[in-house]
Length: 257
Image (cartoon, rainbow, N blue to C red; front, side, top):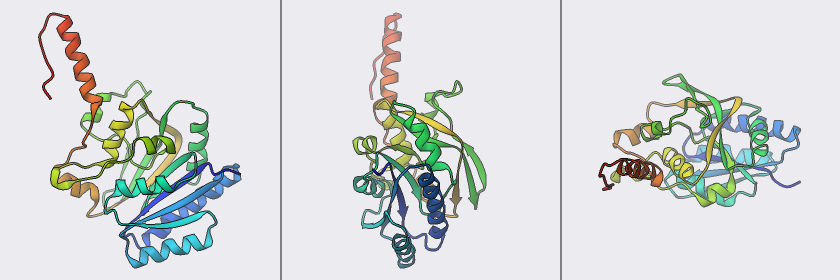
């Protein structure tokens, strides 16, 4: 049976917290297997500590189809890219080393993705944030009437824990974060790039991810550095289109950025 899903687990210095994440992955894979969906897991260890290495190696030893790779990226997006390059499945599913999936996430996401021939990035319907700052965050579906593309210029609308075709990730890899140049939010930046390339971001109904919040996180460090996503042609294209419309109406504008 061919591998359908490649799970990309990113690990750094999560230590024993990663054991709960790995347990949730094992449950999701068991559920997928019961539905005839073959999966593999690639644990990408980016400059990790000894304890995290031990937890990942133990998971590799007890689970067929798991592999551990060590990289020296020092960058979450680039580490994810390394996992994608190693993947063999048609689909990739991302999870970070201290987050949790629901048991049916892989099965439900695979069902949704397999039934839609378009280029779609699939997200959970709900995100349950726990830990230091507990709250709920609802993902928005681009085909929902309430969706406004302009909101993406102001804030990130989706987490990185998506389910997507591997070919799209190879075509549009994550770009490197550079806090000194105030370029960050690799998942927000990737969302902008993917939409510009024609992808649609949608939710998988009745699914939830649990995401741990900490006192100090990459998101906080990125915000403190005053970063913005690098972006690309998505919003420039919209501005140029609006300028063209205004010029047609008798105004005279030009795009100077």
